[in-house]
Length: 196
Ligand SMILES: [Cu+2]
Image 1: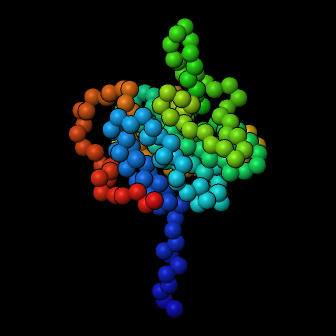
Image 2: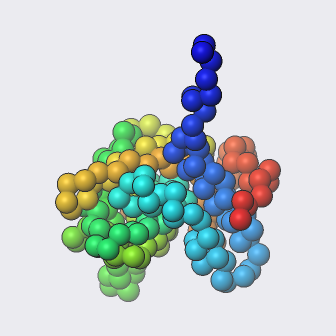
Image 3: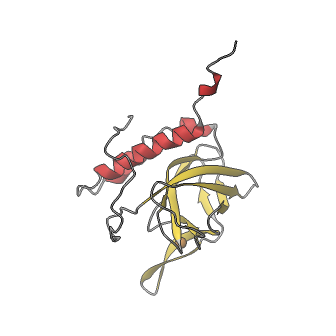
């Protein structure tokens, strides 16, 4: 009677953390010069777990660590439903936000607010990634350090909302290099194997 195990339910945060660990491993493994690394990681994660958790399944969410100014959040948004889903807004505690896209202007790629929001087609997915659509944090009120967890709330065209958590990571994309001034990396990239 005094003690039960009912408190040990798997929380969504734990599921997200597991997905993030898998993403970290995938990113780590992609440092060889294979050019086909991206699809393999994004097609295997469990969309079934996310189906009951919200409007969209959100895979591998992350936010780029930054001390001030602008940064952005990324991830893969999975729509398992039979209707298109449109994201019309996003909020987080530490910054005002906008939905952005990249577009070509005068021969240069620039970002701008995405007209009409971000649409995820029925039974499809949309990937938010550096160089593409992203959730922009316009003006950080405080630093976002690697390992920090930020909570985001998406608003959809039909008025529904969905909250998810993304962990901050230094941007490790191949195209840009950031000064490795802070040597510590709290991400457990080397200690986990992909569950699949
Ligand atoms: Cu932007």
